Length: 88
Image (cartoon, rainbow, N blue to C red; front, top):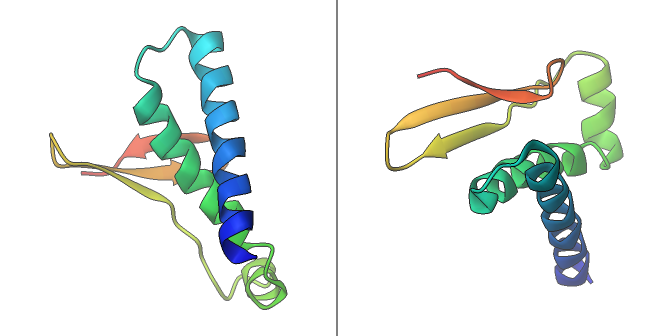
């Protein structure tokens, strides 16, 4: 059952990435899929009640990092701006 759910999440990520690529005329779909997957996994963590409670009380922070292997750059997801910002 968990594998099926994971695959369902992956399909949603791909659909969202394709929409973003079309809307913003971005050619690098792989890059978008990877970053959207990070965001999806962050949101998925909040579906667990014990994680959500701690997050809402400020007892737990959730970060979404994207590592670009070719350049060595690291990006952090800024949930307020809804984008990844370079941090290294």
